Image (cartoon, rainbow, N blue to C red; front, top):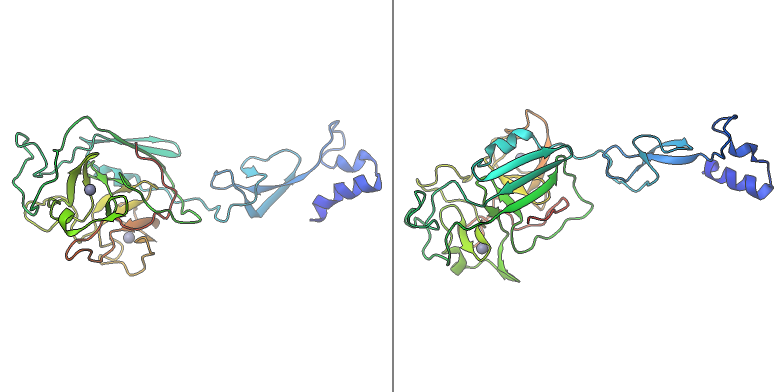
Length: 297
Ligand SMILES: [Zn+2]
Ligand SMILES: [Zn+2]
């Protein structure tokens, strides 16, 4: 405070310019030291508690002092991306960003494949099918920070893709239209993978069933489900850090702990919340995002 008022006082008192040249006496240019705030996470917002006074902006410091959480996010463990279906999903790492590009074609069986597909099976749990079949020329692209951060406030999800599952098909929320929550009739159309087809393609709403046909998707376990649009990973109902259903989840099913991918490092991730919805269904993600959502195009 004193430091910032001092030049002002000098002006008011008509003191000579000497006072302004505190950085260096032989500096010809007028130099006014101002306060800079550390920006450890590089988001352009500075930490009000870590300051430097200098005439020129020091590296890693900004003039802004409004970052409530300058610690930065913890990087998403890269090995998690090995769990994605590489036939459908291309993952590229570019410094501070990760981009996933998927054709949306899952690597498991479903009655939603064309009958000519080797992955076609007769319905196992679905009682009715929605129109359309898996296929078509689709792409889902999501770019997220390598170290996503929790946002100051949470964000509701909308219709359409809100995440990309490890199989490559998108994750949808707990609605099937504007203000239209999943209902019994919709639930009948889910295959054992917890997905059905819609105008925007094949997508998951609920956890996969525990049936012999399900040889790879998560059911009440700690497997990776996918990545949400805010960049946080989502795992099954159990957490590898304890081998059980976590008891310290926030309202979005998130917590900070290690997983099978992080070699003991704790990082924020979501879990499928272990609560039934519509009888025996478990919704994948019917809550708000705790990070900053990115578009899935
Ligand atoms: Zn749907
Ligand atoms: Zn966990």
